Image 1 (cartoon, rainbow, N blue to C red):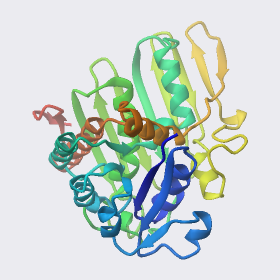
Image 2 (image 1 turned 180 degrees about the vertical axis):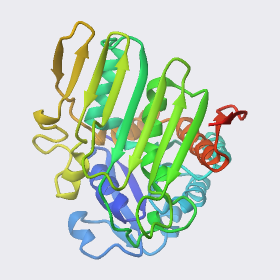
Image 3 (image 1 turned 135 degrees about the vertical axis):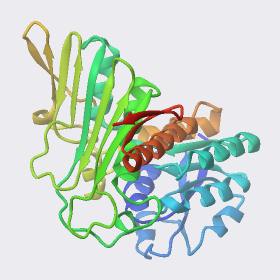
Image 4 (image 1 turned 90 degrees about the vertical axis):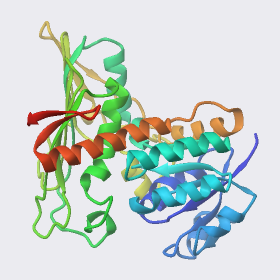
Length: 352
């Protein structure tokens, strides 16, 4: 198997918890350089042979680095991804892709021009609960879906001193958790007709929005996406209602918690959810049955990246899909500020 050397820009929570260990678990990918001012020497204990750099320039200049992964504060994604593409590297950008759909379109065109692969780490496409939900919908067990509700609720009453909660571009829960919920909805239902959004600051001292309600109108199907920071008793993660049945699912994929505890893809039981959190299908005839959650698999993303580089296969997340997510966020922000429903194509509906 051909080996490709990977450079990782950023070693905060995302880089250290999600990207580095998952990259290291995928055959054919070798984590070779990490650019971060915060990475400590003990990082080398977990990844022997990795070169630590203060800035990204060394990996951009290194001809041995074939794939560059950008996992830095959101406002820096565009410049770093563009520099890596101009250096002739394949590129993965952590979600959200960039902070404007125009920037995203420019990077997509640049990657095509340079003949390199570009993808975005929308890892929660490989949450076990979403994989299960997608299978349930696509298999027709619910019939045509008319109502889709997805929640990403937490109880985090203290505002932390970190960039995601500071008053700066790309901060706030809509860019963070909203990127996941929006991407999942677009995977299931395509592009929406319109976007309506309400954002709020629930916690004392919050500098940016920490809660949202976003309604995506797909015609017959309506998707309601919600995130909150002061939810002591989370309800269902997913509630999906169709003409023949409903699917209700509590709990959250265990991979993030497993990675934080030191577990790695390939370990026994990786990605498997406790039976108590399995979802239930409620049928129109009054019957119900439990649906075993499919194993989550974040490593599937980087396996897909490997095959895209090695074989020219399609990247696991098309960058155009990531641009669409950014476009929805742009319209959600506009909808909130103007207090109206916004057509996805750019028009308006009156007060929403």
